[in-house]
Image 1: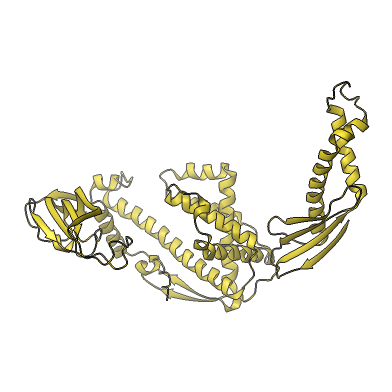
Image 2 (image 1 turned 90 degrees about the vertical axis):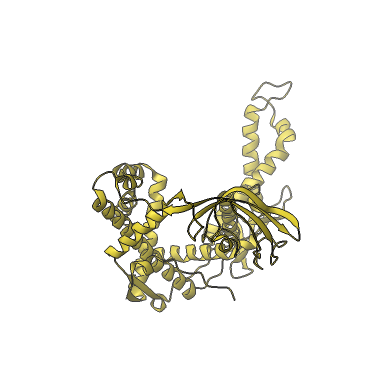
Length: 436
């Protein structure tokens, strides 16, 4: 077998492969002999059909099958021989495909980039330090109470925070517009559900009152037909209800699965959950800084095949998440290219760190992570048992642990500074950079 390789770009390879005619004929004859044992030809008993008849009837199909399989087999042999690592399937172009002659074809494909991860000592990481104090727990209790607010009807003017039940009809230039009317809508004043000015105009309204208000749609409103226009809404207020926070009692605690221990038991459970959230938030922020640093220090070419595959995966995820009657390939690829490229590049870099530093998932950390995740459930032992009986889930946990070990490896060489902050700041999501 003759093989030659041409580098047509940083990652693309054009490989020419020549397969001797003797190997082709051996494969063709092997298939014809297999066919002869089972072929049913009128006038002949099974297995007794002359080879000349078999060849006349089946040689063309046997040759096509042999050539297809030979291309697959010799491509694999060739890339192993040339020490190439293809990223995706090759595009195969036959050059010589004639009977009685050597087979020659050209396979064009991309290879995985070869590189060494560098610049770990240039990566800067700010590691947050925080703890959950009593005031944080008090604040969380207030949040949980507000999330479970009920409303009671009142006979007074509406205030911010009250829930109104309203019927309304919206018009622009005297004509009703689609989506501008509703009946029996419950609206909490100050929630920001409606366009600016709508809720503010209803402060002071009473049950049974009709109000005409004139809010203006924002200039960047999603419906361009309404953007920037002033509407006239006729609003009938049918009920005003004031918020009522639940008491911190056994009934409230039971909503969160806490049936014993009273207020102290509930506070202890809330604190435990907050501490788990804090650990995860700090770990996530450190990881993001490490990954950003690895990307900046190691710019590499991305195989188009891997990028395309990742774009397709993100398309499928988007359809699954948002639903709708749309096929994944109907979503524009450019919507996902930036995210796909980041994922692919990071995947390649992380894999190279694992290889360079000979990292393997630490069994103790795997057990610790499973125990941590199981602690969020009422019967953690059952959750732990389920993980250890599920190979796919265990492999996913090992992947997470291995990624954590990559982060730890980078931190050993990176410029790390510790910063003490409040719980609130530590768990606050990092704001995405604003577009220019």
